[in-house]
Image 1: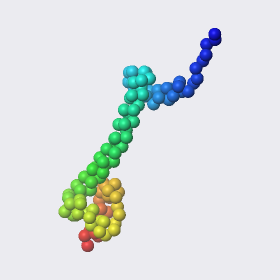
Image 2: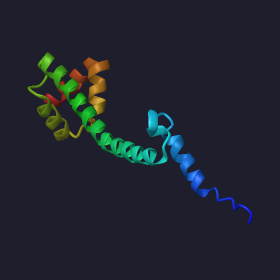
Image 3: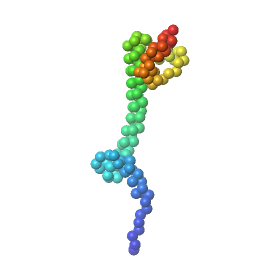
Image 4: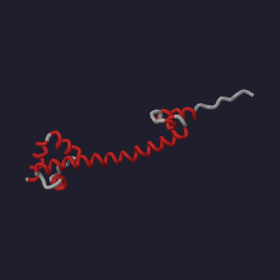
Length: 117
């Protein structure tokens, strides 16, 4: 009886997984079972850390704006400034406020002085 060649679908799936794990070290890039485990683990970590990254950047922006506000004595605190911004309907998000605080401090002072008035 002649030898039957198997299909290519499973091989194509494994090749795709290997391409994902090609930068991993040791058996994590060579053995199919460990590759699939490491792929699941990597994707779980990526999903978890996307939320963590958003959280960390928000904390960084708040710290930058708060530091500049307290340094110049523009406002008592960060949350007072944000509250006044929302009361005046000036919808600047924290990222933009942090960029203004770094690159154009005078603009942030002008904004906060207008709000206080």
